[in-house]
Structures are given as structure tokens and as C-alpha cells.
Image 1 (tube, rainbow, N blue to C red):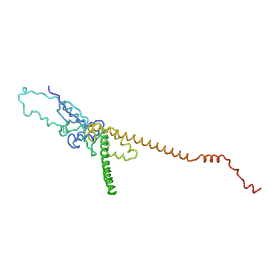
Image 2 (image 1 turned 90 degrees about the horizontal axis):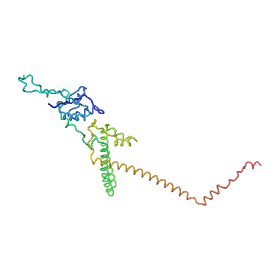
Image 3 (image 1 turned 90 degrees about the vertical axis):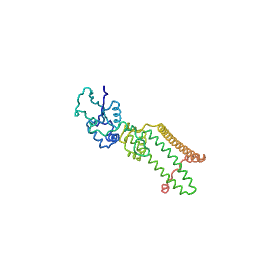
Image 4 (image 1 turned 120 degrees about the vertical axis):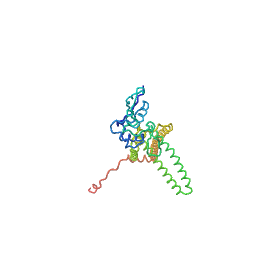
Length: 319
């Protein structure tokens, strides 16, 4: 008995939460063709994307297609008729079976090895605004950027201080030029990391400009740290690869340093308040001790003496 054969059928249905533009982009990358050719698959009519597949092949192709964001389905091919040469006497040339390779849907895209051409995860790119990164990788890359920036800033400061003895103007110039270049590089890379994190959520990278808005800018980094990304592919590409051990370690260090920074800030603020209170108390005590006991008794006696009676000079003149 021959093995059952299957075909993959698509009628334009998309997975929940997947936009048509995202599916078009992913399918075009999968079949290595342009979006205009893929657009014909969304006519609403069932289209056979792949035919004559075994159960294993059909399942592999179906899983690959579903990663693009579409909902394809398997359908059984009609059972083939088994012929025996012993039952055939004379077979006219005109009755020879047609080549099934030519019987292909006009809507079928160019042939491609579906299971091999669709990447399960996107490629990581550090210095660009393309691609996606998850929450842990966002924290890890930010921490790595800090580890690079601090030594560079220290080297620039040491170089500037080393030239102070020779020329103060030269030291200032070195500090301004090199320090400004390092600051610009830090800001640019930080923006690129944040934009990739926004892409993972499915948001536009232009939303990074919200960090420049008062109050909103102080809350927005927490949105990038805690908001989960899309599980599957979106309009910005395939999901990022799984987190490595180094990424997890750097992410934990980033959280620890943030907690220590917050605790140090709160402790320093309370210490300043306590110091100010102690200084004010000491000032008040010194001002109280500056008044001697004799002056205090004189002031109390003066306050205790009755005031002299008022004299009406106008009455005396009339008398």
C-alpha cells in the first residue's frame, strides 16, 4: 500500500496579532522573491503552496510556513491509482499520463526549500537600528556599554591631566574634543540598543524620542526593561536568539548595580538631611548660650517693672 501524500494549502488567513505587511515581508524572504509576487497569495482563494509531500515533509514545511505568521493547513492528496504492466496490452501514446510536474497552481510562488531558508531567529547586530533584542539582552548590552565607557573616560581624563603642566589650553582642548566624541558615541550606541528593544516589542524606533519628554523620559527606560517582546516574527524581523550565559550574567549585574545605585542615593540623601538638622540644632544651641544669666535677669526685671503712668499735659495747662 502506497504512503499517503499531502499538500499545503493557504487561503490568506493570518495568525492572531500578525499584520499582513509582516507576513508579506517574511514570505518574501522565505521564497526569496519580491512582495508583489507574494501579494497574489492573499486573494482569498485557496492556493496549493506545496504538493505531493510525505507526512514528515508536510509537517516540516507547515511549521516553517507558520513561522512567517500565516495559517496554512495540510490536505490529503487524492490517492493515486496503482497500475500493473501485466494488465496492459497496448498503450497508445496519446493515453500516456501527463507530466504532473507541469500541473502546478498559477498562484504558486517560485520553488524553494522552505525548511532551510526560513531562519528561526534573527541575526544580532550591535551597531545598527535594525533587528530585535529582548529584555535581558537590552540590560546586558547597556551594561557592556558602561564597562567600555568608564575606562575610556578615565583614559581621556588622565591624558588631559597629564598635559596640564605643559599647557592648560591644550589640556582643555583634549578634554573637550575627546570627551565630546566619547559622549556622542555613547549616546548613538545607546539609541541603537533602545531602538532594537522597541522593535522587539513591535513599536517604531521613533518612540525613543519620548525619552526627551520631561517625566515621561524618566519612566520610559523601565518600559523597555519590563515590557515583553513579540514571541514570533513581526514587521522588524524574526525573534532574537536565546540568551547566552554571558547575557544573563551581565543582565543580573546591571540589576544589582541599579539597586546599589538607588540605595546609595537614598542613603546619601538621608545623611544630608541628618547633617543639616544637626547643624541647625547646633546653631540654635549656640545662639541660646550666647545670652548671659545677668542679661536674662535684667531683661526679666525690666519686663516685671510696671510702666509709668501717662501724663496728660493738656489738663495741667488748663488748670
